Length: 319
Image 1 (cartoon, one colour):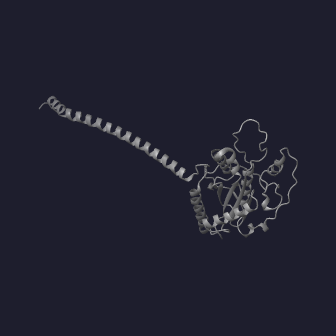
Image 2 (cartoon, helix red, strand yellow):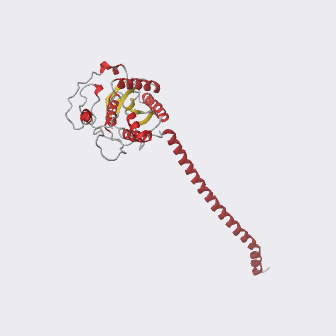
Image 3 (cartoon, helix red, strand yellow):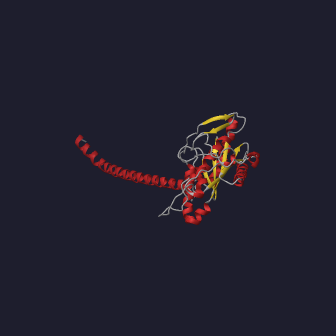
């Protein structure tokens, strides 16, 4: 067979194969395109599910009224921080676990807000106040709503001295926080100074006041009851030192004449930023050791706090 005939025969035989290969290639390309579209749709669906899961997680851990962490998240956080403190004791060969403090804060005076503005607006006021308190703690701390008008603050790597500073700052913040005002018209007759709210706080420290979450919370609750019995607007530590004899009442300070009549005493008391609460003894109007510096809200990052050791195994609170 001559070469031209052989070429023609091979061309005739390969034409169907080439056509089949072209068809197969088209099908493969279409299949790849469909697979890519399915993969993109699945990735989009997965991202949506992850977003919904994160939203459900956040909803399950946040209080719907105040926007801060709820009781469930507080319990999990406290258990985790206690375990972390004990692991540090084992791994770092310390004499005891790393310091950990809990602060139970109760706000009084919301009955008047509810009576004047209703429960819906009172809830908005409570949310605004909770967000303000969240700015007074470190990123590594945890603030959550414990129940009603009670808030719990978990303070890792913080001893009794640092927790006292935080308690004093939070009590002062509640007293001086500006409430939302929906009223209009003449402001005559309204409260010129303060907001009518006060806070009582109880402190408990690991391991002095307890080695487990339930024991620490009971100790903080006892300290809160002592602060409440002292008239509120103050804080008390847990332990036997929380008794009334340990905190002699401060001598009443002279109240200057301030426009506003019956609100003059409140103005004089609250003009001192961060002043120590009356129930801790000493001058209730004395300036604090450190001026209150708002910190970023909790949850905005994982930044480790700075500490200056005041005793072995105890850290001083530094915002």
